[in-house]
Image (tube, rainbow, N blue to C red):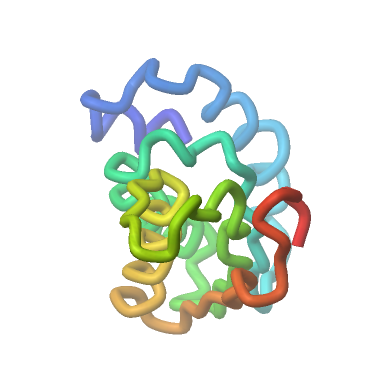
Length: 130
């Protein structure tokens, strides 16, 4: 929400659509009770894993704060194992996608009632959809 962005000016304007999406799609649901949330992360944040590692737990905490129903369950599907193949099995590959998956894993360890469904073993690294 705008209040969260105002409280964290270092991220303001980074993704201008973030407030619009929240205000249009999530905020209208807040008057209703919630039992939990399931999140499927798209790949648009894959190039910014460090920022994501901060913003993703902040988003979950903010949603919980807005609903005022405590730490309701928040589950998400891990970012797919896309572009993860190596030419040689002995080569290390630097991947912002892998770093973002690690940030998702961190959130699962850090937040209460939060869990991730790992999809890497079921996806094809050449196709984005698991």
